[in-house]
Image 1 (cartoon, rainbow, N blue to C red):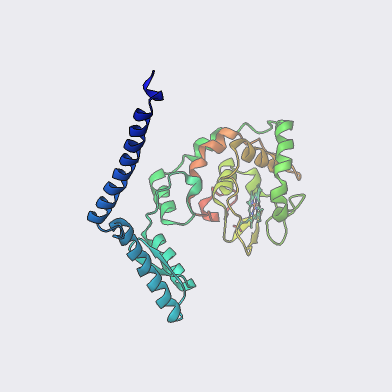
Image 2 (image 1 turned 45 degrees about the horizontal axis):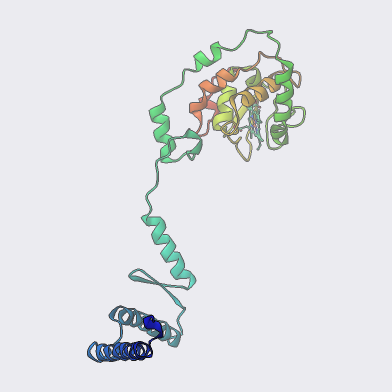
Length: 269
Ligand code: HEC
């Protein structure tokens, strides 16, 4: 007969089971009684609760004083009314350090960085750029002319559909500057042009300068639009090469040109 079927063995196993469960509860009660009586708060939980209560008290006090709500940051309290926000953002801006700009395209014309760049860059050899101009009579590439015509759309607003000029831009048709040294034309695209200007013997004084427009365009595009104006509106002059534009990329970011900065094209210009 196996022990499972023995009534005596089964009876004592039952009481052993009950005994072990009772013992477990006794141990549990005793430990709870000795270790802090059960209601003792967790120290971590308690300190977190204190911070919450303090924050709550501050917010309530602020509301009572009829102040704007506050944003509580690490160690500092920022008032959430407009002035406070601006003070906060202003502080962050003032505290941030500017990064040095190396790409000439990002330099603000006329800024200290632009002057520094102009001083460090040295003068470009304009004669070397103009020496690359193809000889007189060289016909422009028709594909380049077509591209230049499209790009001229931007210039049209100020210089007129047929380069005739208008109230905000001088004429390009028959203009001595357009037929003159290529370096002038490229530099005008890279740096812009301002102040009184004599074009083909006539003095102009426009309300707004010509903005630098070449910085965002490729060498080929600048060359194409300049080749186009040199061979349209009755003008005829050798094409402008992308290599010539590339040689004058370092002009970007330098102060705007005035007539005196250009290679003269006529006596008194
Ligand atoms: C927002 C108007 C405006 C636009 C757009 C403009 N220009 Fe000008 N441009 C001027 C003004 C103004 C001057 C004269 C600057 C001065 O008075 O010193 C000028 C001068 C020039 C000159 C030298 C003077 C002359 O008549 O020959 C050339 C060349 C020239 N621009 C070419 C261009 C080309 C090419 C474009 C298009 C890529 C262009 N401009 C777009 C306003 C503009």
